[in-house]
Length: 187
Image 1 (cartoon, rainbow, N blue to C red):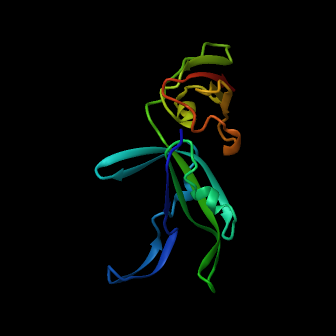
Image 2: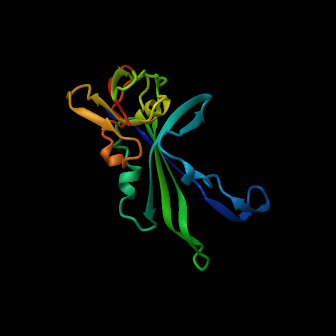
């Protein structure tokens, strides 16, 4: 089962005349703070009176001329996703361009993460996720989480999420369900 990928782009800063406003603007753009987002941060989007929540899964910085844009913008995602990008890096005043781009991927969130108790002197615990995003589940715990594991719903393969690890190693992203049984390892 796949999802859809909504792609949004906005300026990191702006210094030009805004024709429809009849004024010159100089200052931060809509995505001025995009690079500050980290896994687990919530991004809300409202459309037609409906509010959707997405949790950040990863952030990457790519050179302006990167060949991987098709991968970033692809609709080939496991769950409904939001991909946001803006300029970053060194600014070249001669060409008015930046040297790289910040790309942030967030995945649609359902449910609320459950707090799963950890007995004293125990490293592993079992519970039910309550959410579709492992970063939110990790953040909800009252103890530091080293890793989360859950079985894939159809293949039975064990998938994992490690806070702070690169997105490509976090195989649980896009595969966690609100009722998934999870195994959590504390640090």
